[in-house]
Amino acid sequence: MAVAYDRPPADFYRTPDWAIAAVLRRLTRLCAPSSVLEPCAGDGALLAPLRACWPSATIDAYDIEPRHPAVARPTWTDDTPQRYDLVITNPPFIAAEEILRYGISRLRAGGRIALLLRLGFLASQERRPLYRRHYPEFVFVLSERPSFRSGTTDATDYAWFVWREGRRARHGRIEHL
Ligand SMILES: C[S@@+](CC[C@H](N)C(=O)[O-])C[C@H]1O[C@@H](n2cnc3c(N)ncnc32)[C@H](O)[C@@H]1O
Image (cartoon, rainbow, N blue to C red; front, side):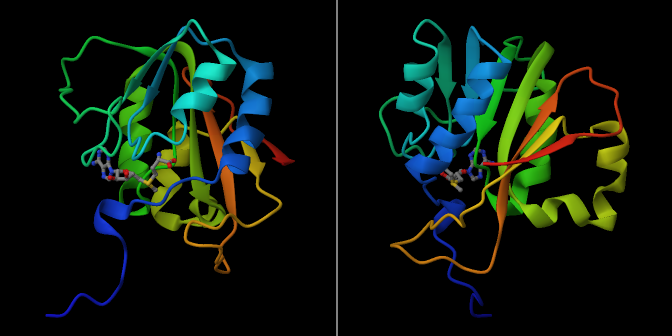
């Protein structure tokens, strides 16, 4: 059967610099991580901005299809002991919830995970169990639609969703970036 869509291999879409800068401005007010994980790092778009914000932090970057020398193929297993203060990525859309659950499992107590997701991620019936257990602390809505491909945008709105490990509240804060 023919492939009915034209996604790039493994859903690689580089996050625009302005969308990274916008969330990092908020995150630098919220936390000062000493360890950061970018689990789907692609060509490393987040790495230099993360380094600029937290020069002494350890930054680990992985991707199933690494496109940058500082990005490695994932080698983790459920027994991997390393935990992080911050996990941040623009995950592949098709595996966003899986990456979220994986990222939460990699956080230190009180750590945060920030994911760039479609706003529609808030609204699915299927995700009710997820939201019962993990409610975002913040939803930072991008006021401008990001372009992931040569200047074009589609009709999809995005936000950086931020969860905090151990937080039990069933409400979160929405802000517009
Ligand atoms: C939307 S791109 C974002 C890349 C980068 N995080 C950025 O913000 O520019 C998603 C990335 O996830 C990677 N990816 C897809 N499935 C993955 C998996 N199971 N584990 C790790 N990386 C994965 C893809 O190769 C792709 O580079």
